[in-house]
Image (cartoon, rainbow, N blue to C red):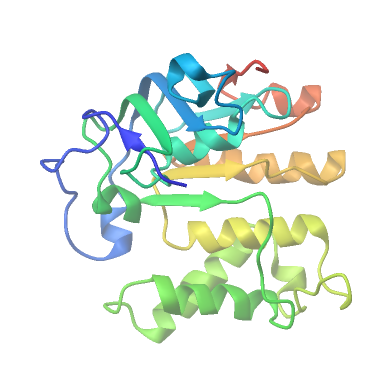
Length: 262
């Protein structure tokens, strides 16, 4: 999917964060601000959206701010644009063509999106894409070897993996395989925590999660959100989309963004 962006989104003069290891860079907190964000995409029904050049509006005039230590939840009916907005705020849209248009202002500590900000950002998708034959430890170690800087030794990376496993309460299933529909492995809640672990290994200051409780029972969902809340309490800026949370989950969020259906 391609898009056009306003000048507020891309800034070649964006300030770079301090150089060094991922662990060092990640200590910089990030304040995310977005104002009047609008996202339009070309549709097949050109006559219906003729005034907008054949484009349909997915997101219309959304604004907000999330600070370090806060957990913002996006709620709304299916098709309201929760995932689209999450991807837009995390810089996951390309920036040139006529098929779609993203306008408004999205800033990270007052600057536009950059490769430095990208290295401080974690994104957990709704679907857990994991290798079924690897164990929990092997999955996280594989991620650590790929994503952590070369300045860290192999033992340091192993130690970080063990820390994340302990932090996410995965010690009991550390050596269990992930599994899939054909191979019995860890539970759905444990898979979701492994997916979250893959992102927090780099110690991101800005964490996005797309419906992290989808398909989970109430108890498991509450444990997942509690883990995410602990990450926010450590100074991370957290945004997530969530569908029909229980009252217990609802009161765990610091901020709420409601999106209406089209």
